[in-house]
Length: 445
Image (cartoon, rainbow, N blue to C red):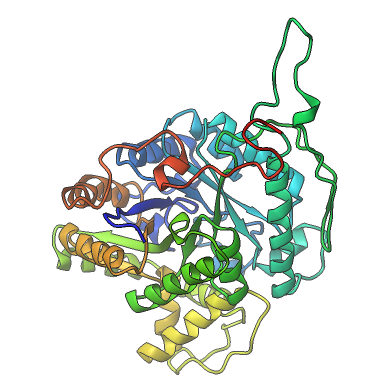
């Protein structure tokens, strides 16, 4: 591992706040998730603070919980990630733009073309968050009566990655000679036809857009199951993970980076960024009071729905003031289910307590003064629990503004976060190499 490490910071911005009560908080922008003017302000603030990336999660279904809970959600409507990030790229010049795209419900040619376009439009700031889509309700929107099994989704994802990156390498970097005198726009010797035929996919190619500015957009992955960690070790350059404490973070960090070393990848070429819900106050007590107020705004309808999604099992019939009963396995997110059960057992929570925690946000949270939170972030960095964090804000714009105005300067003062961008591309920010073209050397042959 390299020395003199600095934090990498992404901003988890879809939804703009993951907390169910965020839109009800006093002073919150209630329409921020679907208001372009608001989102433009937020990304420009993040760029002023030198954040590495603006991270867009996505979901492909609305009717994924009972209407009693859905009616209370501020995330039922949101922009399609590529459309939004393409527009935001023109309002920014440095911050990375990471979009989620599913390998389960899309095709490699579509994904390769969209991300190559975003990388060109943004002049090298695109990143692809590879997801397999755990929500079974999404299947119903794509002509399927049931969801593909968990392991099958990851097998398709692995092949999908090979095809997309192969399509990005369709053209040598110097393929477009644009020789007006000779009449040749491109050199056919510098074009590769993929002709992929695999177990899950068949794609001829080539891609009808030049190789991306970054060679490949940065590859991001968010799975934490065994297949997910292996996919990350083989393919990812950034991992957005969910861990609840430093020991868990250290185990995940060592596991995935150890897998990379075992297959010959440089562990420094992967940045692990746990999701971190950050609530700041002038003092620790003030921050805790803010968190308590936020949590009080979560309706029990939302809380039970969040618990059901986390478990992959309907929790509406559980006795609220009893311990969590035994829950059968599901075909949804296995790592999320395991984290939820472990949290209930570790803290001896009743169903009601567990649901309220998850209904707000049940994962890793830093709650305190700027000094307290900076201490914790520095500890995670130095003790190899993470390379940084994908920050989730408690409400918008206030939760983001205090982070930018109070916490970022403290991190900079300690020398663990940049004061200026190191370059112009997302790869520059993250310290990642530009991948070579698998079909051509630098001379295009």
